[in-house]
Length: 164
Image 1 (spheres, rainbow, N blue to C red):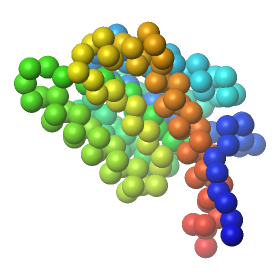
Image 2 (cartoon, helix red, strand yellow; image 1 turned 90 degrees about the vertical axis):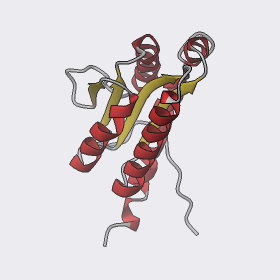
Image 3 (cartoon, one colour; image 1 turned 180 degrees about the horizontal axis):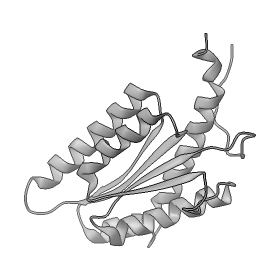
Image 4 (cartoon, rainbow, N blue to C red; image 1 turned 90 degrees about the horizontal axis):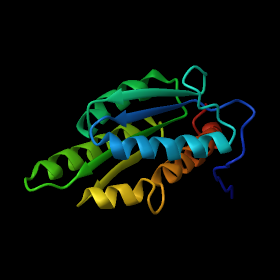
């Protein structure tokens, strides 16, 4: 019996990540991005936009995240993709449509392409809740980056299962 697990140590062949960040609610998404970058940097990833390990793609809002993420995933250039956004409930059903479609789209991309896609879109009832999750109490961006590191490592470790 073989046990496969992801690792958090830098691999011999460097990882490549894409971060897809929604501009809408950028007060929140920029904080998530900062937490994500901090984690990646502390784990040996060069987060400099001029570098070769992380590409940053800004989209208008969370609804647009899946479209761009699919294009990145099928390119075969990335070990994992981290999607960052914030959808905050208002007084209309708009929240449900945006949050639901973003979640479904991101999940479908991961299962259809085999590329780990991290769902880092906060869905909260208030701006205060979003800010608490983006740095006031803790920064979920850090956790999203940890998930990406672990999944990229795990998929690389499992590569022999798909090689013929």
